[in-house]
Length: 239
Ligand SMILES: *Cc1c(COP(=O)(O)O)cnc(C)c1O
Figure 1 (cartoon, helix red, strand yellow):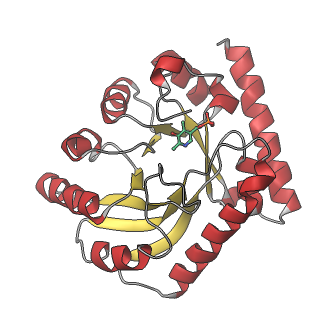
Figure 2 (cartoon, rainbow, N blue to C red):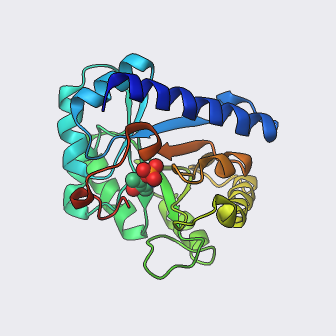
Figure 3 (tube, helix red, strand yellow):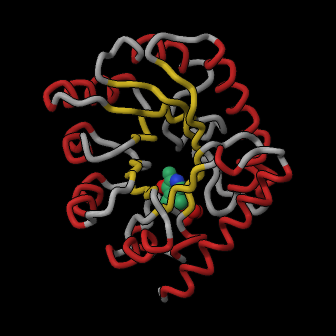
């Protein structure tokens, strides 16, 4: 992709964020744009950095490790894809935030790696609010117990919730899911659980980030809208 096109896309996305914030009477400072650079080359990330992007999302641990090693600018890396136990070592401590913690066991495994490497790891709990069987994540029913267990871990710190909404033709169809997750987020926050802070609500992708912002997203994850279509072969989990 040409640098000019990336710049245009970036400006457009930022304008859309601004408009969504205006509509919902939110400050744009409340919304962090995560540029989802999975499958995209280092050169494109460099262009993004030059344009002012500071947060990047990836879904493969080795890709984060490799890109981290090459990019010297100070940027935040977000792990947004399904994480396997044996790959945790690649992203701890490189990654600022792991969005995709979908089981208590995974959190315990992250704790083990963090303890060994003597670092602290910030995570989000991935929520399956749509109830789709194919989707990973905690449900409204299971999240409470998860918080109870995970909050006990000394090197793992829950910062909030994340969800991947279904692919829909009209983003309005996901509004109720975003609203429901925001309600849960506020509810958990009000409980003031030790070692659990609720200040990140990661929801909204290219197709629905404006609706997600209107419903309270603090972090949106935009790939296609910035970098264009991804190669199909690498697109298994990324649609
Ligand atoms: C790929 C991916 C995104 C970005 O998707 P786009 O539709 O390209 O914006 C966001 N979140 C997750 C979890 C992803 O895997």
